[in-house]
Image 1 (cartoon, rainbow over the protein chains, first blue to last red):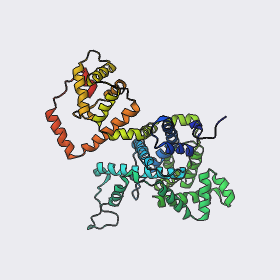
Image 2: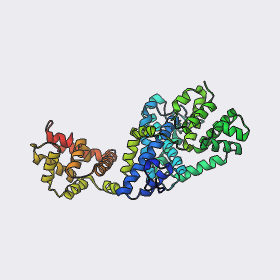
Image 3: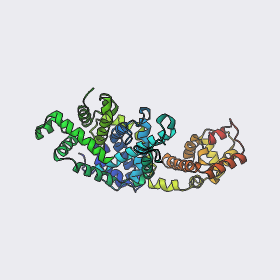
Image 4: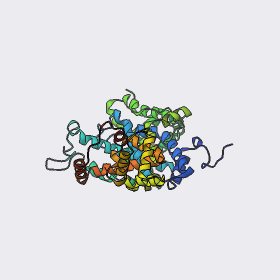
Length: 226
Length: 208
């Protein structure tokens, strides 16, 4: 018989939320069996979430510069950096919900990828084109470089402890609220794991329409999340 | 080329089924002009998608990924005890570990050499080097990776304690390296420190 108490159940049987609870609870302990269990829980959690991080690194495109992305041979290195950043974030992690964790992880990936691209661009200035090229819309007298706005933001991102998981989730909730009702229903259904056909039957839409609504909603959410 | 909405839908279905869909493969099937927008849609989905239920084989495979190992090491290094240790200077840590083991510098040096399998090596030289690390004359980045292992065994320090502490010391040294002050120190050290004899087993143990 398996106990319902997540503090004694085998870690393999715990949900991601329960694993996160074990990690967050033991964060201040630092030694002993509870800490060791937290380390093992963290390993389980990272293993389950690693596909999310790795695929997010692959999907990353620099804001307003979609051709600037992580080179394939650097995916693994950047994913490691993302996790290292996530660990630092965890030290300041006030949230305990999985949604907050996902949102914070997304922020970690985006910021790590931006930093990585930025440092690569600086390194390969000649290959990537001059960073001193004028910003879009800037005239010859405008001293702003095309990445200056992003660089200004990077100085904020340098401080991982300031990542606010709650803010990430609030941002997502706000983005969802801005979708029309039909889009919200499609997004909720698809996130719950319902098929496009099932959602289409409920809403009286074709499968192709459901897929289009979902695609547009994701692009809209991405635009609002950054 | 497949329609972007269709590709996104397939990615979502595969994700929920735990089939670990690949972003690059998905984007590769889209028309070039649709790829950036599809990448954004995939990124948004990945930010909110629930974690799939992976089977045991997949989970075991994922747990072996270098990124997972790195994340666990980084997490271990955040243990409050380890952080408190890591905040102390490297020389103080080395001295503390030796004193905790109840050993004089000479006795510790002898034990370090035994742990390294160097039974006939020069104990005096090893004691001098060990004292060099305790006094701050030798910086943590000068220690060979093997020395950390041997120190851990000889002084009864767990790798979990020694590794992160040494890493933290190295990171601090790396930060200091960026400053001009560090450069002047290095120059001064280089001018005043006698070069270690190459090929000496004690030198190799301590400095690699």
